[in-house]
Length: 110
Image 1 (tube, rainbow, N blue to C red):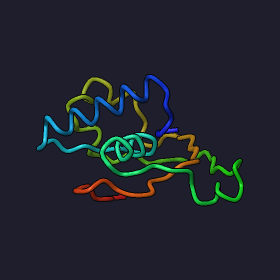
Image 2 (image 1 turned 135 degrees about the vertical axis):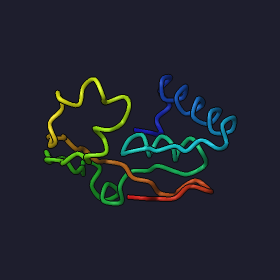
Image 3 (image 1 turned 90 degrees about the vertical axis):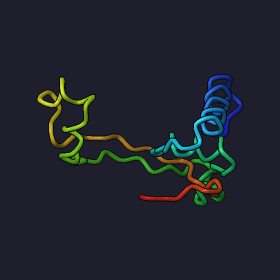
Image 4 (image 1 turned 90 degrees about the horizontal axis):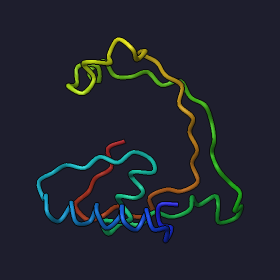
């Protein structure tokens, strides 16, 4: 859970908060769990999905085939590996939490 009081998460949230206040012009992208940790670290809130309020065991789990954007292969960090990674990959998704409020100055793009 992105809001758990586990030592590694507390350290991660503290680091994110410090980084954000020190590097004010840096853009930060969070996806899924990363998005939730970012929001919770920087003044927003991550919480259990609304469906879990009535069913604590509720979760969304699925295997999905995802097509990677061609631009990914042009990124500098991909140059050595672009021939090893297929254009479509299978991703296991598991969702139990969501963003309840977005930090001030942040925007949702997906």
